[in-house]
Image (cartoon, helix red, strand yellow):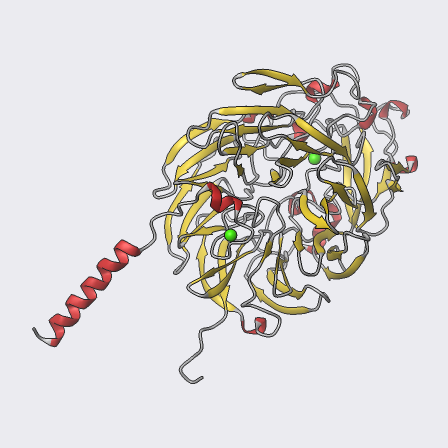
Length: 588
Ligand code: CA
Ligand code: CA
């Protein structure tokens, strides 16, 4: 055998070995999901664990060496559909799964960045997304990838091929329903693993609900409406009514009551409870629906075995400011107490007892809040009536109620972008925005598929030099330990690590790393478009990787008003970026 042919034979064998050992698909078990927060070689849930702490035990990338962090590879999401990339990647067995704008999904080789397959839901005409064409991530189980679409379908794809295994209609997109959240997969005694999802559409007078389905065929297991008076489903039959009819809603207003569950949920195995937040009551004009309007602008805990509400906490009763209470409920240990924290659009950071929903504390995390003077010991807000927009019926022309300037603005002290909790510093890292709005009420009647607001608004920054502010909050005291200001509004998720780092993206295009203890900036990298996605980290072949999807968009450029000035020069995009430390060179 000549040297050349021997070389060819070896190369041929090597190629064969790569084919056999190469990426097939991420085979995710229910135990992988249960253990996700502590296993460093994969990220198989939204939130790096179902509790949603977004905390990684990895320490290889640390304060001393992060200055050396460099890109490993990138992947363009392609097409002309480049906007609003709010996803969080998932990774296992050498494959990354990401979703993108316009309801698309990719499987990507995590070693090379090469695309394995792409699925495009090819949306119909007439979809009604309120707040850009975003998708916030997929879920994995077995050999399937699950995600929801802007035309309100829940789809299971074959993880190997990207082909549709099953597709279920969540509801009628022509009525305003859509789906943008990452589904949640958990285990139950009664049904085995279930996929838990919500609905978007609170600006169209839909009724919010949380639903569980079977992963193998998408069949409905249970459904729980968030609005009092509506009846749930269990085992294919009507189950129980949510609340008591007309207790906190007048007349027929509950029938189009909102309370959408558009951000998805978290799950805590210690209490075996699913936590969901609920959006604004519909319409925005609060004078049309006197009462607390349960369970809108609230947090609810649901029993996964029955779909029953075990407890609820309403952050903004009779909400008149679009203070959706959808923000994630993150379980954590508060000096031995089973607590959960949630940073509300209304500007207050809440700590609750997650076993029973009991209010522990509610403290402001943005400045100059006006709609409430504070949170009373019983957990209800201390409203300032001067900052409730007036009833249009009281206006001379009956068309425009008294306008008020209120802080925070409706886009929220914190919007969808998820915070992180670090188990070592015991701090929450909350991406927040400092802004207010002019807000007034108008008459409105419900019409299927039409915006059901009864309000007009205009957003304004609170300060000249910044809108965004990443805040480190001590949940034991509610004190802000440090803050990192950013000129443009923050709109992406946060990641924190055991090595004392905090990662987050900015609309200006940077992925940044801060010192988790001091807030000092240690590293940044410009990704070429605004970062509104959520970063992850995992270990692969002994190296720590960090990944984030870049691509400016989301609600801010659509609804920004005067704040658009801080963002008008930002470019669209769609790119998956991965980073790692360089391998030592031969010279070393
Ligand atoms: Ca993991
Ligand atoms: Ca809303």
